[in-house]
Length: 505
Image 1 (cartoon, rainbow, N blue to C red):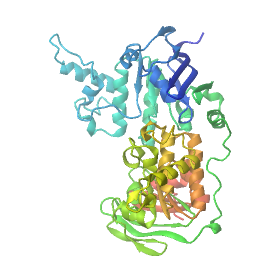
Image 2 (image 1 turned 60 degrees about the vertical axis):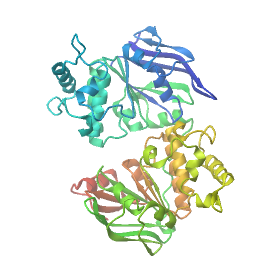
Image 3 (image 1 turned 180 degrees about the vertical axis):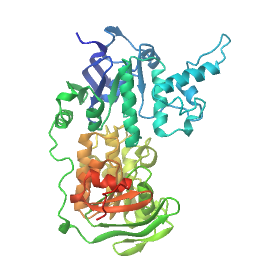
Image 4 (image 1 turned 90 degrees about the vertical axis):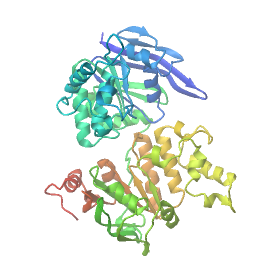
């Protein structure tokens, strides 16, 4: 019989009007990395909340080491050996590495005072697990660390409770490629010590890189599990979404079918951030903007949108000189910007869907000086239908929607202004493959109607699959331009890193 450290049998969880989990099974072996995949809304997060004691199941059973357990709280799950590293870090930036790792269980003396020397020594022992004991000072404040090292501290905080199972929810969402490689090395070290890692990710390539076993959920139900070595991406996708997605990116248009020049930037720059940017986009064209993190891509996009205006260079829209000094100016010109951070910069999370759809076009949805509730509701209803947003009702706060549906709300809001130029920054970050396919179709459809799109993305497959032309940035400058049909991963990376062989076209 396989050595299952964690089992979930027939887990069911219902919220008002929604059955989030319907008889879900999960079996995790000691020392394995076990992936859980599914579309947004498939039940992954709810299952993790049940496994960590945040939610109590309505039916079903959880077993640890073959013995039934019942979690009445998150702390009860931790005591039974189940810990979680959330996508949103739970660290306190103003506290030290040591204080964060041993939150609520610092070593104390008989009088209840923290034994500081022991705290620092034990922290060094944990840092040594990841070869960081000579690199990081246990007394250093967490706010001074890189995102990757902050995530290491989050992992160490979890494993300081001596878990048998470590759950990792979208752990690569804020990491660079180099940092992801380091994370995977650390996961392998943990599983080599016998810790089971339950790994949640929308990036299917990561599943094949790090996981031993995969469980697929769809619509709150268990679909199947499989050894990763025995399946391919088509298998995962078809079981996740219930259909085959033949070409997720859609067909690239004939360059001859593109319209006239819609947007041009000439010598655009902002002191200390980026310089000398020459960029153009035709009507109906999707222009990719690639490069490493920190290359200046987002900053260039925000400058075009007037959020952080350029201080040198010129811009033209449909042949007319423009100089937006604020997002309001840009929207008035017909320029939209879909931010990379929907939660803090893109959406009003505590407002309903209708308010988010209307926020950037209040004048269009007003009758005289007053916003029309009827027009707002009409726009929201149209967005729900056209973009297939699973909202649970327009009055529901947007923060309660799945990540994929939140992203659809944001896209619907910006397409709704009927932009002449739309800048999309990481348009599919944190969404599943089914929602990605829909988002790409929305962008293709918008371009077909004549909008020029500038797409900033760290996902090379996305850049290569969707772009008609690609600009690559390096160290605040555009290093080269490549026709979409001719671009390869190697050619884009060569320009992004300055390696020999990256020829500008």
